[in-house]
Image: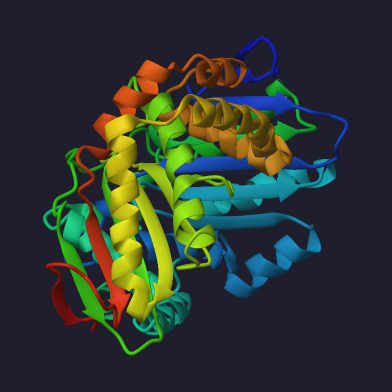
Length: 430
């Protein structure tokens, strides 16, 4: 085992005998250990006719593993006060572990069983299929969920990102136990784990425990290549009719990938437009001045194989067209002129000051350690990040605004009974 450390934040790069790498922040003042693991290859790896396969697999990892069926597995976690959960997204599967130091060995034993020997018992598979299918049926009447799924379907019509991450009731019905076993075998491998740990654990002990996880895994994952694409449909407005009093609107266009040189400048621009503060242009114009919506927002969403800038608003049906027109005009305005000097100074101050909030719990820190590795930003990025924000110039944000928003064209999805939309394609929501 070898370790190296970053300068200010005390992140250790731990390399294990079996060749894995984990990032560790050793913190002995808090008697909790948090471990986050990412397994690249999420719903984008689903076969086209078996959408929801990876999402279903992830929900089953703690529904029985090794010699323990689902009830026994959950009871053991409860007895030892171990918090273990799994999730999935378009780009990966995640594992989250929290434990006290005295239960660390047992926690890693349980984690290892779930990662390397999930049972996929028939009763558990059918139970989780039923739960997901029931949620999908509820979501089919949820305007926000419908708008989000429709946006990705329109933006990525011939790409895995265009398919629902949890599949459909029909596609889940086609998933077999053999499919689950095969997906698990392809994704869970020694070269496909990204690990972050925080708490009262030494580098040597972490290395030993990680190697115990790896011992039960194949050497290499078998991921299908996913092409990098730009979203289609920009300039279109699609109205999906649903009998609800408000319209849920999702809008977006191509955005930067995380490694793009202008990502930080684009991040600052988006904060001015619709980021997480009450001073954003969209919040001021749409909510404060005109009262068209309770919330309106935008954000950068850099996936592994596509960059997006996305936003959303919910408004009364009779005001939907006005709200969308206003959002598009604000986007066109910032694309043309960029942020003002005052807005740039304010955005930098907020983004620098709020960065520490990403590190106020052990789990958040562990998540950041994983994300930095996934994004290949370097072990010293936390030390450099605020300086990168401070260094953004007026010329850079103006150029980034033009690149990010072009002439202001968007792909817009509105679900409800929206009125006043211009040149909208109208069809039923379901």
